[in-house]
Length: 352
Image (cartoon, rainbow, N blue to C red; front, side):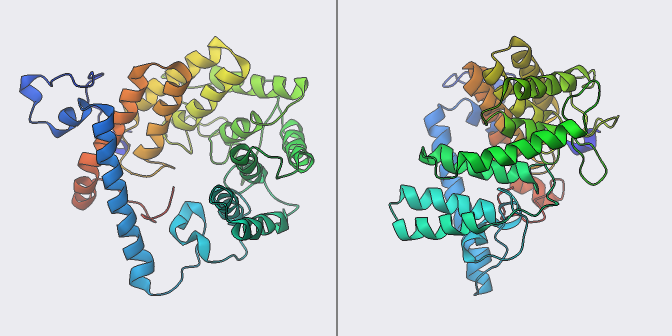
């Protein structure tokens, strides 16, 4: 198990602007962690702009032609160049590209582009055999609808249409329910728990919808079932009945579940969900310095847990932890990738 992540040897907390202890002043991580937020933020912005230039150079610049892989998961950088048959979800398909296009065009006051992307979005038809999970299923499509309406503050995507999708997701979950868990889903023969293909991701999106009292009860009971059946160390199973305690990722394990639990703490106002979210965050802090860099199963995705907990609680400790994971990537990722210790990603210029 330890070979999936680096030991977290960073200090539990360093107060901003507090001088580092004399014996650690040569440690670049400690120096950066003690910087005021605005200075550290400026460093990250410069690094991000440099990376953006690299992406443009390594994709559009070097190929000399338009790219066609527009999915956010595999190649966000080629998103604007066309549509073809693909999954119909926010992360893996033309739906996500159109949703982003609608929001950006509206905020840029570009009516022509807005109408172009909105027309594209509304023309998309959902296959009848669509699964229910986030990456490739109904939940991922519903997420895109919610994204548009949330960012534009308008009922651009019909709530009646969204409710129909929600109803199908709830119905499918109830059809596969057990005596202990009122909602359950299957993808390729497995009943996943994680955010990408399972319960954590589906429950997260459902909580953004207007639910009936019975539906809310089912979502809440499903999350409580997962809490009660997590591993003794606080991590979450990758799928129903799995005893493999290997995953601390956005897609599987404590990371995706922590993000869902922070939302549940707000939706249900329950200390039980707040404690469970915090406990999952502790797992991510201890075992979340993964040997990959991305959002789906890397350090970047794990850092989002601490941002989510900070927004929920206002506890500066969680903002520090997000900063710590970002600092680790900022100072060490390129060296570790060059050495072969860290994986830079199969699609290093994609979003996830």
